[in-house]
Image (cartoon, rainbow, N blue to C red; front, top):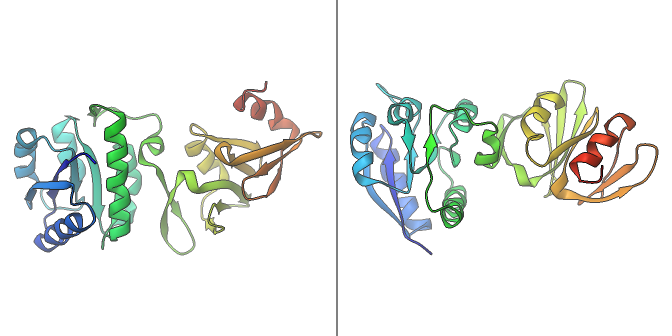
Length: 249
């Protein structure tokens, strides 16, 4: 596996030291070039170090993580945000972050983020992101969706979502591991985020992930069978759109 280099920025020395130890433990192929407690110092040094990835705290005095990236403008490294505040997730998505890790950082999630970094580096010789240019679908780059549930804020890998089902002003997520998550947002909210990816609305109350589509059964509107065995009705209104999305128009 290729060697990677990293810079760590966090105003708390204890957090920097803990993250450095965890990186050395789960990914010895990642070389931590330098750590910074002051974001302004990091801005001046990033061009010199040219890391593969920046592990970046968000809530810092003087200059927060988002301001640091805007100060840089165009970057040629990946960004993994590390923060104690889940409410920053959507803003992180908009800035095309590779991942978003909540403190205290779990070693398993850190390892997954670094594996994702390896995969992205293997498929792209270089990364050039204009921080000031809005991206059409940040979830396509982030790989997770922030879900505000009855319990709190959860981060669900998009590929793990089989389907979504509307229930008044709530939405139920059905996941590959059999879990169900009740989200406190409408299905339309999630459709707006996910339809640019591999999701399609097949009914006013159903949104499915085409990656988990197993079968279509003919009928007035028809029925789809998903990878978990669930059967979902296709409405007459959405049938043509569904056919277009699967290339069967």
